Length: 108
Image 1: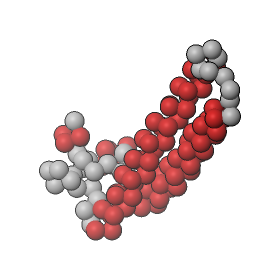
Image 2 (image 1 turned 180 degrees about the vertical axis):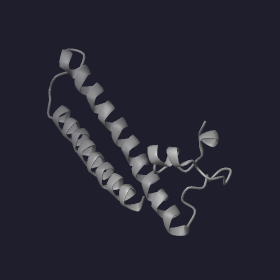
Image 3 (image 1 turned 90 degrees about the vertical axis):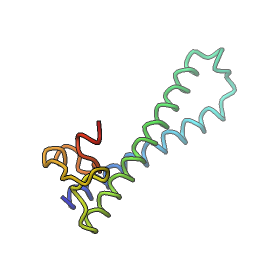
Image 4 (image 1 turned 60 degrees about the vertical axis):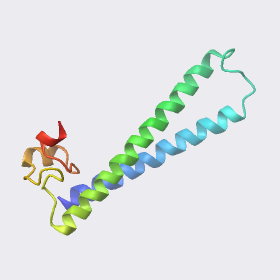
């Protein structure tokens, strides 16, 4: 499971970096623009895309933190135990969401 978590971590970090670059590029391009979003029909789309990229980057960052926490749980011997109720998390749930910290009952 460690190898999968490490692979997932690298993939998530790469995605987060790309998304952060997209956000920064969008800000830079809007900063250099003299068009007002109200007058520019593309301005609203650009602003929406920037907000969407930022939200996705934040979500990806939280996923990175979840994976790091799962790796800590592996190191401390608590991986696979629900952090809330301490029961074992089902293998199926761990296969589907390796970084999960909660059993299906506590996650609901």
